[in-house]
Amino acid sequence: MIIGILTAIGSNTYRNQRNTFQFNDSLAKTLDIIKTARNHAVTSRAHWDGTTSTIPKEGYGVFIDKANKKMILFANTGVTGDNINKYDSSDGIEEEYIMTKDTEFKALTGDGSDIPHAVIFFRPPLADVTITDNSAPPDEIIDLTIELQRLGAPSTAPNKIIRINKIAGFPEIQL
Image 1 (cartoon, rainbow, N blue to C red):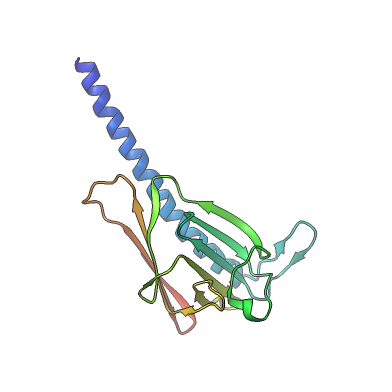
Image 2 (cartoon, helix red, strand yellow):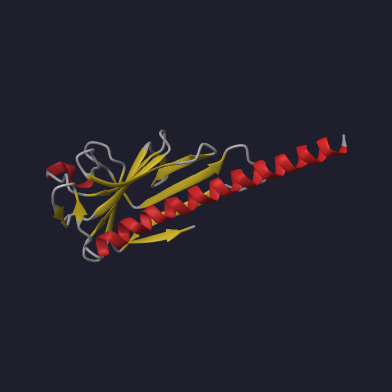
């Protein structure tokens, strides 16, 4: 009976630690993807589409899809007219990340309004930032808030909030 009790306590502790690790990994990956897009724009990194290598003149971006719990790091190559500040599937995908099952976007807000999608564009050479809601035509956003929640966490566990403010064309990323 004692072994059973110790096993139950140990498995709960292990499960909680694993879930905490996965949540922290999702938070770190979210920050990493945003910073990687910025770094690619600053260094004018070339995008390889399978046949040619080109430097996207409109830089790199991150598409955030709240409902599907995913983020896409992309080269802004599918740029035409009104779509200059909009992500579409013709853009060159560099990396796609789907949140772990225990993590979700609790809130995705642009300038205080809830939005289903957000796109953060970094343009070379100084990684000037443009944030939009990816609508048609896209509305520009000055203050983007990404709130991540660990599912099944104790009610005392705080959500993690990432804020991206457009200040003089440059991003201010706060955690």
